[in-house]
Image (cartoon, rainbow, N blue to C red; front, side):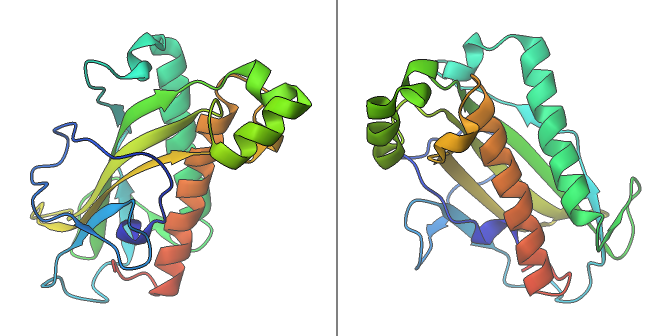
Length: 198
């Protein structure tokens, strides 16, 4: 599920949101994202999903520290709403633990505002579409746990810049684009494994 995200971005740091980073490994397909899957979870057990409120956990030098709290609340609320919208089309979203409930927990560890100059003027658009520079984006740490025991089923960290300039005509358009991408990819992975956490 979340641990199969494709990433695109610079080297990823550690925020402290996850309990253990030692088990994170590079994927065979994508070597920029780190992930872990618990080899002992019971496949097919999890049919429903709890989605915690998304939090921010920025390091001392993170650009997200300069984003005002109202905007952060808007962005994290947007991200959660995107996940609920995607998953609720085919799956049950609940707010209480249960035997068949997996709990999704997410921390945004960086918000990178886009530079409007880089997103509007033709030469800048061409250069930055190729490099991702100036485009804005976001980083996250995510884990899925058993809703009753809190056993970690899987976790991942990802750092992504949205290079699609169509969505970059606002300061945080790319951050929102990244969040929408993550929500869609999460839904896709759940679909692929028929609701199993895998």
